[in-house]
Amino acid sequence: MDSLIIAAARALASGDALGALNSIALRDDPPALALRGIAMAQLGDLIRAKTLLRRAARAFGPQEAVARARCVVAEAEIALVSRDLNWPLTALGAAHDTLQRHGDLANAAHARYIAIRRLLLIGRLDQAERLIEDFDPALLPTASRAAYELTIAGIAIRRLRTGSARAALARAEYAARQARIASLAAEVESATRVLDTPAARLIAHGKVRILRLDDIEALLGSKALVIDACRHVVCHGGKVISLKTRPILFALARALAEAWPSDVSRAALLACAFRAKHTDESHRARLRVAIGRLRRALGAVANIDATPNGFALVPSRARDVAVLAPPTDEAHATVLALLADGEAWSSSALALALGASQRTVQRALDGLAADGKVQAIGRGRSRRWMMPPVPGFPTTLLLPAALPGG
Image 1 (tube, helix red, strand yellow):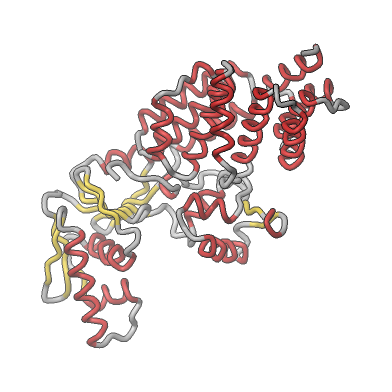
Image 2: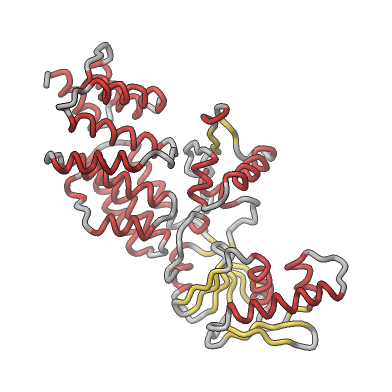
């Protein structure tokens, strides 16, 4: 390998994309094409970067399997950054195996790290943690170790393990200082601020209080019965009852919890669950059926008693009842939570991350675009959606993940 290629590779490792291009900008041999692609990715021209990497992969001969696998890994990272979450993972897995087999352990580790980051992004935390179990971050270069620790912190934050998150962020800050890459240090600083950002509202006894992540962790670990409107689940004593696919039952549970220990009138419950302004016997029958279903769903943690006025929530063992609500009542807050990372997302990637249909996500995007809260870039299949990062936008509890015990 000649001196210019080595100089360009070292420049890229230190985050100096322009310095790398100064060495190889006019060259079209396969190693130079690959390094130019990585440089363009660091400069933000992802389309050009992808084209260069594919040219390099085609140009490497059949005896250069390691070089081709490195190009595949680089393209996978570009797909991740550009939120192309449907990028074929089989190619990344094959590249990882090739690199591992040929002893390129550092790049094999990087391929595994990219797979972990993708799983985190779409909320597959169990799968991400399984990949981490036999992963050795010491094989990664310093800059990638900082990014790896950010991924560990991201998993801990979504699991609401704030102590583990702070420890991972401290390790990420140390690695970022060693790497001396300003953009990486800024990313670590931004992630650290999440822990001190208002993340939810606590509604209890008619009062509302703003909570941070460590407050939420303490609440979910307490003896209180928590109706979590961020995830649409009911939590108590390690039990998690999901009502995500049963919106009427969750609306009734939240209304009863917000009124606890008082009861809620039948008229108020009808208006809350069915949005019925004028009720008749059919509405009252639907309410009785829904209350019966809610009793069965919450049987392990609470009962619902009929009162002369309506219904009341009666916890089985909990000493208190609280509602954990999103910090904002913004419509389509989960979509905004993903877009708040400042990256450009396709509607298909958003649908994959949220576990929703692409049509549902597209309707949400159209509504947000009409209100001027998001903007579209490009046309057709290349269209991407983004919003300017909003300082302090509370995203953590709205991101896709299972709560502890789920």
